[in-house]
Length: 206
Image 1 (cartoon, rainbow, N blue to C red):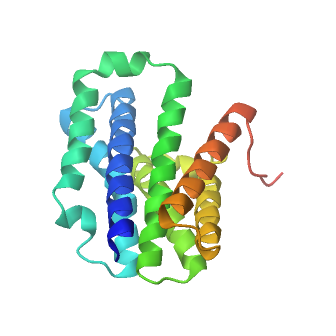
Image 2 (tube, rainbow, N blue to C red):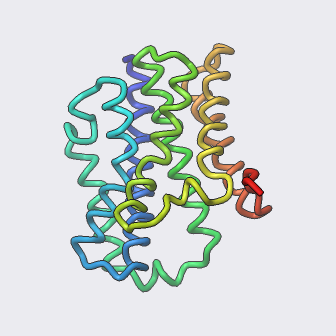
């Protein structure tokens, strides 16, 4: 892995870890979980997608379990929400959706970049980018005994899929890795927000 992609992957992974840690802890608060439950959901939401990705590409033990900064970041996010839960719960829906979309974008980019670093087929790289983005939320919902939101909510996994595709195409067009990641992440972020504001959904069986 070259230095640029290594640094990009680390920054995107840790940033996404913090944002998804906040989101997991916030959901735990709404389900009246105690401090341990909050930290468990922060950890699983933030790191499960990356763990699944790393296991699938054979990078074991997963990076988030080898590097103390990943669990520390997730637990820090959970702790912040625990002590500031009144302020967090008082936030309007739009900034919360934007934060979640940012975390999704960062993880989609990080997952795609790591898959490419491990010389995965572009199609597989797109799938792994998507798994990285939605895996943590899926595990969180399973812990809460819910149908995963990614299977029933408006455009979500599709946004991660789209961002990963844009990033792969940009790389194939010989754009620098940072520019490709920015294009992919921005595409994912904007599509997720547009889907939320316009109430876009994938078709369902009648």
